[in-house]
Image (cartoon, rainbow, N blue to C red):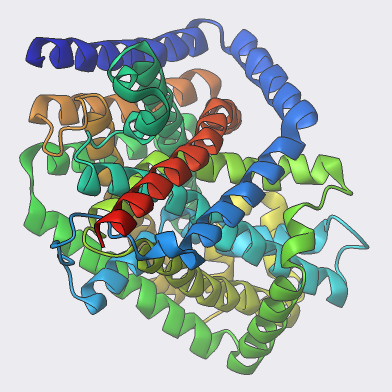
Length: 502
């Protein structure tokens, strides 16, 4: 059995690595053709199957909350005598930390301004457009995103901690295919999980490095070029790879603490100097509109081009991140009931995200109005500078601007470090302590993929990475739909067995 497992692990590793290398090689030697292929795939998936992304996320919501409120919600993620490894406060803090990703820093100002200028319905630049913009931002970063992560995390936590199966996505299909999870079908599922994670992380790495580069240009005039972006990626890759390989837990904990303190500090600072009353009014209105339009917005496709460009991209991006974030929330939730897990994972990070978005977005709108459209102009010129353009309208810019770059760096390093660990786990048979060599390989691979594509294709390669992420997420979305049924089947059998023993 050991030899078989090792062979299976190598198959997933070699196949995943080969796919990544082929993609990079194709992008390096045939950049124009790669762009054409990726764009055609993107157009095909969004035009033909955009509706399926929306329906799938709706199914995830029904499945997650349906399980939570049912009798199955009492089932524990672990053995009956297992107790939570962390206190409620520690657990809540880690779930909050999981919501503070590079995406929130990148999009918290750029996205609301972009929707304000070009809303999916009505005219841009109006009070109604502003309200619509904040509702959409809440929608894209709210419950829908975290339900996707909750489904992935529930599958991993339940089948690992309660059933003793490998910490792999394929284990969630045991109720349907039994021991064939160790065969070609299971390998294919795990390979797709790796593929989705690689391009989901690479997209974030590209976006984060691009924002740092444009920030350096905006602040100090250091020109943002593909070469500059590549150097930044290489720098961050070295840091998170060394941290992953050497197990510098104290250093990573210090980085995590710095991220939290900087995040909280920026929120308080922007709240105080960005217009407190304006932000609170904006938050209250946006939250009400979000709740009022929850169901309708979930399935809204009146403006198909806009939905494909924004909502479908977001849903695909969250699906691509489901193996990574799902693994994170699963590992810290052993001993919790399913009901506790789903409610906490879907609501706590969302609450933090809404506060973050309301502060940043509300301040941006307020300061844009006071400055005569300075932030709008910056976003129109280059949306990656939105955060710096907003900070420039407040005091202490000489201090907050470089600190913002530090925040971006530590936000991404923490996520990339964890993602590297997850990739190593997925390609080592679910080993929760994968080898240093394997962790180092995936750390270098993530950075190398992004650097090579940007050096050859320039910043246009970021668009290719985004569309590749959507393409990678499509088959994994189908896997997650089947996963919902498999989880339900396992929970039903588990509950019936428990009822007989009572």
